Image (cartoon, rainbow, N blue to C red; front, side):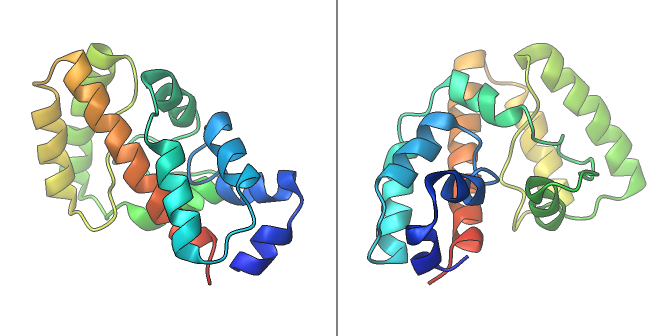
Length: 162
């Protein structure tokens, strides 16, 4: 959707454009309420400020619809399509290893592993997962929230264009 159309959309329609970026009600409301935006940079700055204070609760809310890394998103939702386009192909052997590491991560942290996959190789993602398994809950939550912000802003740039 272009910026002018986004600015003039009904609030519910604008939220639906943003929801695949980050399904966090407070963030959606804040960005939509700040319209109209004169430029894409203004929209992106507003979205980044609205994401600056995301919490573990916000992370968990956003992850409710997010696929596991290393598993191809099967759904027909916009978010599933974005996830398929962001994750690199994973060789079968690494996919099996990744599935085990994902299970270890979920057992330790109680949520799925989240990483900005775009621009990373499957091996890089696996290495990051293994490293993050060594962190404590607070360190890992801070990293995961940062990754969620990166994903949201990358997707925003694809969802709303000049």
